[in-house]
Amino acid sequence: MPTEEKVLCFERKLLEDLGLFQGLSLEVDKYLPVLTTPANLCYKLRREAEQDRRYKQLIPYVILLSQDRVLHYQRGRGGEETRLHGLYSIGVGGHISDQDHNLFSEDRLGYRDGMWRELKEEVSLEPLSEAAVALLNDDSTEVGLVHFGVVHIVRVASGNIAGRRKGILAPEFVPISAAVRDASNYESWSRLCLENIEILRARADIKTSR
Image (cartoon, rainbow, N blue to C red):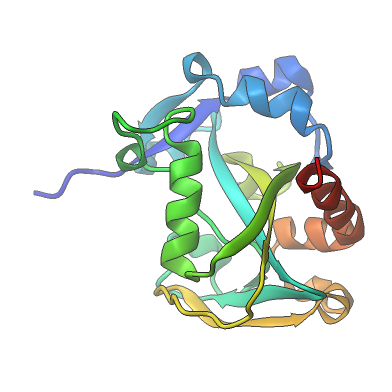
């Protein structure tokens, strides 16, 4: 019998204590160190975490940029979140599993290990730079109530997508301006990012130039 998947979570009360926000926040340095402190994290069975609003699942949401183009794709039926099927997305990533944390993990309960694993599995592109630039909390949807996103900007040299995973349909790099123009066709997290994409790009440039 296969072992049930466990996913990385933190208590919603922790977010409320720090300052609950709706939508996109740029205060990464305020929230992320606290939310990713090992003492504040736990692994819960995924089937329980999807229904338990006392917890938020911590999700790396990676936006891939190649010059002035952004990777987008459509979420297919093979994806792990059925409530997002059919919507477009610019965010690559997913749940952090307890299998991402091992004795050799250098970070907080496997968060970064899981982020890079997801990126490699889904698109297999070599990164030039990476920066955490924003946070996402959307309590207006059933999906958003139990998830919390960390937006990472990853720049890549090539737009050639080597990796493919079930659930990611027609991935391609499109002009950022085109994605912004069609933002209404994207899932809520992607819409929030597209509405603020120039700010996010600028923050990534500042962080990676330090």
